[in-house]
Image 1 (cartoon, rainbow, N blue to C red):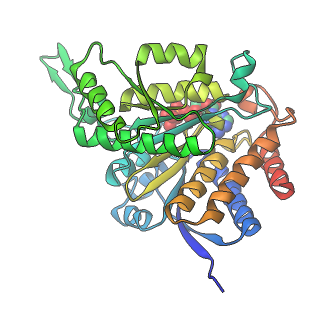
Image 2: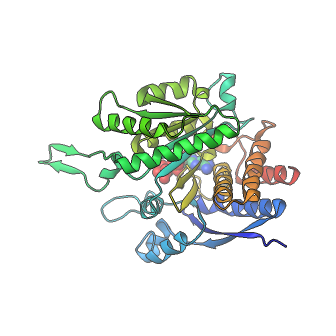
Image 3: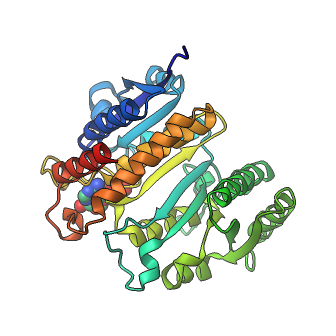
Length: 365
Ligand code: ATP
């Protein structure tokens, strides 16, 4: 008899609403793995964040980073609090420290409408959006973090870095993603989003994009300027499939994508590298609603579904992929009747209501 696969998942609940959305998420992960069978998740709590910093003087200890890195995947709630900062004023963000330490170069931000949860666009086609933005997460303008040069208190310089290695792996990852989506019925299109008409660095980025495109002839490779892309994400977002972009552009466009889905509380994300991956909701710790029961756990649940899909693909464990689809489907089924309206969108559905509806949908699926 075949033994079940056990996935070791490092759980960083973090601060603010992080632990609130994480607790029901772990229950759902247990429920879905029991339901599907063939695999299970072993959760290991790993502390990190602003609260941990107050107690230990570090947001993410070497030992905790090592524990997280030894897991098959990392599930993160949200970390950092506005009033707790490093002496130089920087915010505490272990999620960024992990991204750097584990070389998580692909920031995957799916923009997928949730049927029954109306987004801000009135066009009926906006009710079935399904595209993915891949944000390069190790270089670009963010390479200048901590290296700003201010000359004579008169001029500040932040330098954008685009490397061949960084671009090639971003594009290869994005083409692979477009290919996988195509097999499931998507158009098979990848758009390189840049500003190649103005900056030589982006012309270089686009050149590498078309070089890599040759390896993926079945994918329709296109390029677009970031300003036009921002316009089109509002005007006809249903026309996108997969987009790949530089770090800073991706940072901005992914929040626009979250807005199209209906807000931060429903937007999931993954930061993926060659060996490791972190799954976390796009939102922060939302200290203003912490402890009120208003936190929307949807983005956390969808991030966990992405984790199951990634683990399943990586370890050739079809049951985990199936469980990820089931969890995502349960979220969609919970919202489908249209009466679940999260507090952040002016409704009255809070953490408990949303969790109960997703659990119910999962049990019925
Ligand atoms: P960060 O800088 O880490 O992104 P932030 O406080 O600036 O954090 P968020 O925490 O993402 O930004 O969210 C901004 C506001 O959106 C919150 O203050 C909260 O009111 C609301 N919000 C965010 N996430 C959720 C959620 N899951 N459920 C309900 N409301 C949320």
